[in-house]
Amino acid sequence: MLTAEKISKSYKQNRRKILDSLEISIEEGEFVAVMGESGSGKSTLLAVLAGILDPDEGQVLFEGRDLYSLSDEELSEIHRRWIGYVPQSNFFLKNYTILENIVEPFLKDPSKDETELVEKAKEHLEKLGIADLSDRFPHELSGGEQKRAALARAMLTGPLLLIADEPTTGLDTETGRIILSYLSDYVRSGHSVLVATHDDHVKEYSNRIFDIKKEQQGPETGNSEGS
Ligand SMILES: Nc1ncnc2c1ncn2[C@@H]1O[C@H](COP(=O)(O)OP(=O)(O)OP(=O)(O)O)[C@@H](O)[C@H]1O
Ligand SMILES: [Mg+2]
Image (cartoon, rainbow, N blue to C red; front, top):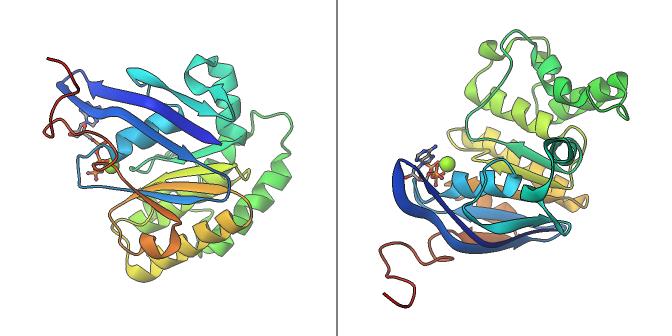
């Protein structure tokens, strides 16, 4: 479904390669957890795989299409229908209610009916245990409640692949479990989930751990052949 080939990435302020010729693929029905210490590049990897951060080298293929050769319009279409992405920090439009925030990105899609989107959003909020918060504004929610709202938004149209950066970090165990079992139900219904996490509980729910340090040659572990 999603395959990344020889992905490298560094940031201008910091010449070290955060991702160094990294390879990863996610198949249908998999729940993959990217783990590694803080600063190891998990968020960088997820953003590259989600199609929102251009790698310096390499390709990201989603169902065989290179995400970074698509037009903005084609990529938005992929984001609305096929790849849901939840960044590490919550992002909401502050003058919109939670329900409006969840539905808003999809209103541009002519194939989607607003009433159905609202129904679907309420279903997700209900299952995530925050149905009573739908008419509140984002700043009126706790971090964990915002996280769940962000997941509901990313899952609204049932994307084939859900990419969630630290979906349970900083949450109490019980809230974390609500989220993790929701994600594993999602996988069981034929979708794929990719998370980045420090949360060891995720291991109980995921099919595969991708240790970001072990999967690539780190900058300290030596050089690629030659001088
Ligand atoms: N926009 C940026 N500009 C410059 N450096 C960045 C930028 N984003 C991240 N970095 C650096 O890249 C490295 C990897 O960051 P990244 O956020 O991918 O790590 P992470 O594994 O997600 O960490 P955490 O577990 O703390 O979320 C860090 O050293 C970070 O300081
Ligand atoms: Mg991160």
